[in-house]
Picture 1 (tube, chains in turn cyan, blue, green, yellow):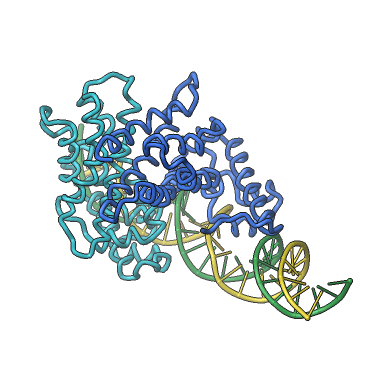
Picture 2 (tube, helix red, strand yellow):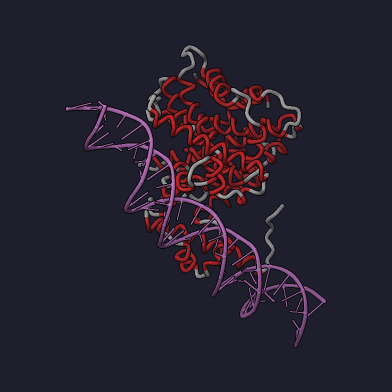
Length: 202
Length: 202
DNA sequence: CGCACTATATGCGCGTCACGCAAGTTTGGG
DNA sequence: CCCAAACTTGCGTGACGCGCATATAGTGCG
């Protein structure tokens, strides 16, 4: 729909710069610890990424957006991942598999996640990121089930529940001292929200 | 825990001022239409509420927070509402009843909701508001079921799914031209996320 | 009833930020 | 080889969030 992969040099550089800024922002935030987000100046991020402060603002409208860009990109991929699952796979398993593929491969970075979960401003931005996954996910589910528009509410609710489950799984996985594989937690959390609807009337 | 109701004059004034600021902010935003949020200056809100600009900032850290204060208060009440349901009521029905009591009584304001849903910044703040309901809701569910800490993930996921369902129900209700009672939409949406777990092993 | 005490409102000022605008610079196509 | 489009950058501006100090109103106690 919106992001193909033109081998254009410009587009490639754009992505690289975007990633550089995001990485720099996250790194600097981690250095300052949980409470010191406001101490990370925009100019610091820009210089750490090797661009002008003004350029930073061409890519992101706020520090939070830059730091959570990775999560936003992840969320964007969820719908596509579900579509690429074999169509004979049961819906519940397809969703779980897609989520694991997107969010648990590779294993998430504990430090970055901890930073986000412990900083209110970043929590808000991460929330927005997860929410962005809902619409394409709902569309993918609807297309997969081939049902009519009378079930849009159901699929939208399901998509939102899935996104919420992923978020809660992340928080729970973070809170455990001895880390089990994130995929396992994700599977459990998603099981709670997809098992019901699958048993309903699919 | 944090908000009893002392007949204190101070506390009462505080609440009144808070509500006045919030109402003024919402009203001014509605006057400017969906895209004109940035045109609503802080000083406008303050003068419309009859307070100094600095006082506005003592109550809210941003326009968005002020506008969505009502939703935040609603969300805060959800946990308490569930606790006040009769304990012999099935969990699913108790949750639905509590949600209807909090979010559909009285019927929501269509214009305000439309403003929020059509403005990205406000969507983000509303998201935060709904998320605030999750933790006390999960606690209430856990207490009600009397289960141990091995099920915290399940209840947190359920609470998050409930909050998400409420949000989606609001969006769906807004999109319908001929308005059915919001309680009905809410019931449907919540049914999708609570029926499963109830049938699971409760 | 008056007095000390505390909570709240307000004014002032500072540092930062997001963004519009107008060059300067790089990329891609004809 | 040159032109047009896209991107970066520097500058300037308006607004915002908030710390701090002060004035004021509410509260509890003797």
